[in-house]
Image 1 (cartoon, rainbow, N blue to C red):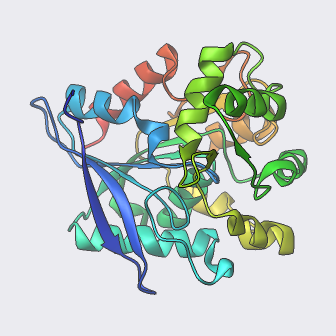
Image 2 (cartoon, rainbow, N blue to C red):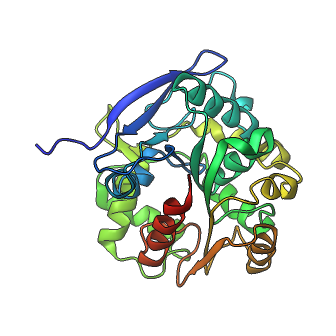
Length: 292
C-alpha cells in the first residue's frame, strides 16, 4: 500500500469540538510560510488531495487542510447555528494558535474564500498570499438558490455509480464536460461508505439550517472591506466561466481592489474549479514563489 503524503491531526475549537486536519509536510527543499487550504460548504479535505501534495513537493512548504466542523472527520456541532462563517474563522484561529502559525498563505474555495476574507479582516498581516476560488464579496442570489436545492437534503446510494449519477443530475450544468469517471471522482471526494453499507454525503445535514434561516448568517453582508484588507500581497482570483456564485463583474471589481492579482477564468466550468486546471496550477505556483 502506498504511504499517504499526509498525517491525520486534530485540534480543539473554542467550544470544545475535536476538529480534523490533514498535515502535509514539505517533501522538497524550499521553505516559506505554511499554506492553509480551506474547502467549500459541503466539502472536506479531499478537495485538495491533488493540490496539497503538489504544493508540499514543489514549494517546500507545509500544507494544512482543515475540515470545518460538521465535515469529514471533524466533529458535528450540537448547535447548528455555529455552522456559520464567523465560527469557522474562530475555529481556524484556534488551529493557527495550536500549531503556532503566525503567517500563512490561504487557499479558499467558495466558503473557504469567505473564511479567508474573515481572517483578513481580523488581521491581514498574518496572510502572506491568497487564492480565492469562485467566490468574492458578492455572492449571486441565483447561486444561493441553487445551493438551497441540494444542501442538507441527505439521501444515500447503493453503489458509487449511483452516487456519481446523482451528482451529475444536480451539478451537470456546472460541469458539462464531465464523464462518468469525473463524476465518480467527485463522489469519492464528497461522500463516504457508512455503517449500513450505503454511500452518503460526508457532512452534517444540519449545516443547511443557517442558510435557510438567514442568508446573512452564512454570508456576511459587506465583504468588500475584508477583500481590500488583502491588498498588497500576491493573489490569485479564480472564476468558473459558468459560475452561478461569482459573476464576471464582481471578478473585475475584485481585480481592481487587489492590484497585481492573477485573474483566471476557467472555461466550461461552473462552481467551482478544482484548482487542478493547468493555468490555475501555474498561477498558484507563481504566487507561492512570491509569497514570503
